[in-house]
Length: 265
Length: 258
Image (cartoon, rainbow over all chains, first blue to last red; front, side):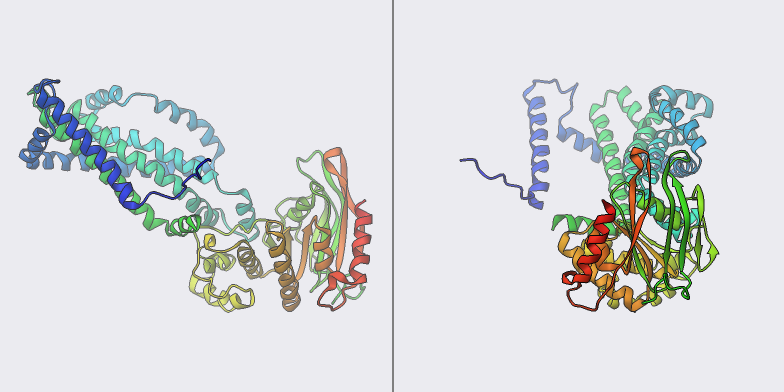
């Protein structure tokens, strides 16, 4: 006899413990592979060595971290602002949408690593080319998510608001903007990770400070344990930014919690 | 109740010879005239796709007719939105606003401060069966309650005439009957002048004092027109649906629909 399908959600402890145990198992396997000698240590440091490098270089990493984070935050803020303006213009003016939508899609096919050296060449070794690269990387997901969010409003809602004599601005504020919030935050999450990676790539290709610069230095000195340490820091920064976006989303969209609770009932 | 048919009562809403088109070329509705007297609930009945919503859009000023006029207390309001209250088929509550702020929306859009609007709306929650729902989100309400909230929002638009586009069609059969009865009571109590469109003959006969029956098939190139008007002799009864008057009116509407 067929068993009934168990559709109960896994418990919170199980949801946390399962990936945690998987990570611990993979780290143990990595440690074993190097200690036993399957992969030579000069090519691959052990997780323990990576942690040691992380501790030893903590102060240095922190100072590079501040630079990268500042560039990413500045670029992300400018990218969001620019993306918002573009999305509003695309929503408001059909001609603007038709003119820029293909251009924006094409702009996303240009690899970041190809454009970063040009930016460094044009804008120097300071923070500006990094911030510009982050803007280029983050602007697109924000614009696309917002523009599609604005268009997702039920046309009947707009008709209803017109019967209430709502102005264009009121329709935008009360109907379009909240309707786009969900997609905006999805775009912002993607942009947050692009921001860190974009800043690091730009630093990697030319600069004096930042995690990308740190990575090029430790690579040249074959300190692969430090290389891995910086990778961990970059991942942690991206995860931290994503978490911040999640918190902001919860604060800005309190009605979503009620919808989730209602769906679970 | 006042009847537009009575010569001394000026209609609150008049549609005069409306001819409407979806695309400016193909005529959907030809020469439709409808009167709604003050304090009267009328229904416009027709099969799906016969252009009922198109007529309501024109009455709400959302579209401009090919020809004909819409008059509100004698004033020409053709193609001017914001002059009548309009409730659409879906409740269209904004998910991002609490119920109190959803129902207050017309007041806020008209320039009222949020606390003023809330103070005006709050006493009506009980009469509209929404007591205790003020701080809830729309997703926390049942379909019937959401429809009541949408109706309260429509009422707060404050216009003299209310247009309702199949307002109960999204509800299940039992809830629909309950909400419909509740609507008839509230409409009578508030002295509402309303035009309701529906494809449900029972709904029309149980709610209206006059029914405009729309016939035609625009998709087959035959524009819709008013095939006849049925006056419903509404008798005060707990179970009006079981009376001879109800059945007689229903028979007439069915005959006109063909």
